[in-house]
Length: 337
Image 1 (cartoon, helix red, strand yellow):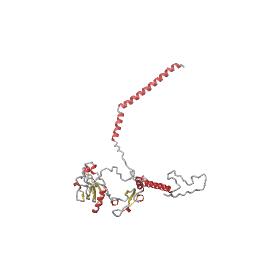
Image 2: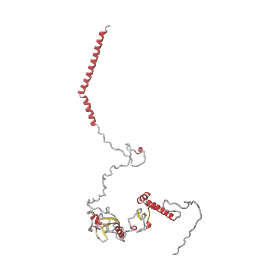
Image 3: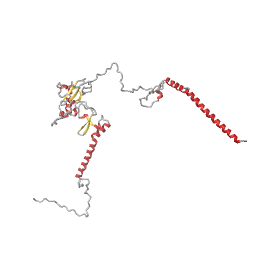
Image 4: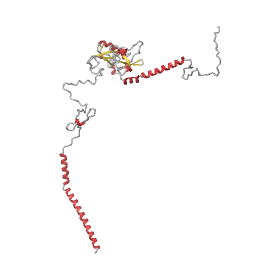
C-alpha cells in the first residue's frame, strides 16, 4: 500500500472541513446582522416601551395601619378588619394643624402687641390687689380681695415685702385686663401716679433704694400671712415649721408643726428640706458638743483626774512607793498677827 499518497488526501479533507465550518459561521453572523438591520429588535423594544407606558402607575407606599397606642399584650388577629388592616383608634398625626372652629365659637379679639404686661393674667372673676412702689411705679400682685375688711391685711403684707420703701395698695376690679384703672383707698388711679410705669423706662435701680431701718420697726407677723397654704414650710430660729392649715385668721402657733412629722409633706420633700437646711446635721453637731461638755465637766469634778486634757492620767494606784512607813500629820496653825 502507498501510504505516502493517502496523507495528502487526509490533509485536503481536513482543510476542506475547516473551510466549510468557517463559511457556515460567517453565513450565520450575516443572517443575524440582516435580521437586526431589518428592525426586528427595534420593533420589540418599541413594543415593550408601549406596554410599559400603558401600564397604570404604581401608587406611592402609604401606611395602612399603626401600632395601637394602648399598652399591654393583645392578639392582633382578633382586631383585624376584612382587608387585613388592624383596627385601632384614629391617630392625630399633626396636633398643630388648625382645626375648623365650631359655628357658635368666636375667636377672642387680638390684643395689641404694644400693650404693657399686665400684673394679672387676663381678666379675673374677683377683684385683686397689687402692691405698687411709689418711687418707680413697679407693681406686684398680692392676692384676691374677698372683702373690703381684708384691705388692712393686704396693706401690711405690701409693707412687709418692701421695707423702708414708700408703697401703696391698689385694687384691680374684676374683669379688668390692665392696671391703669386700678384704684387705691384714697381714690387715686394708677395712671395718675407721677411715676407710673417708670420702671419700664428707666433701669436706674437707685431710684427705689430702701431707707435705713430704724430701731423699733416691725415686720408683718407670719401668723398674719394669708398667702400660706397647707404644706408651706418656713425656717424659724434654725427650725423648719410646716403650715398644716388653720380655721381662723390670724393663725396660731398650733397651726404649725415640725416638718418631719407633717403629713402634708412626702418623704422625698422632707429629705430635700433636711438636705437644704441641714437640720439633722446641726442637731448631730449640737449633741456632740453637749457630750463633750459633759465629759469635760465630769473630769473637772473627779479628784482622780489630774487634767481635763485628752492625755489625762489617774493618780489613784498609779505610783507605788518603795517603802511603806507611818504617816505623819502636820497641823497648820494660824500665826498671830
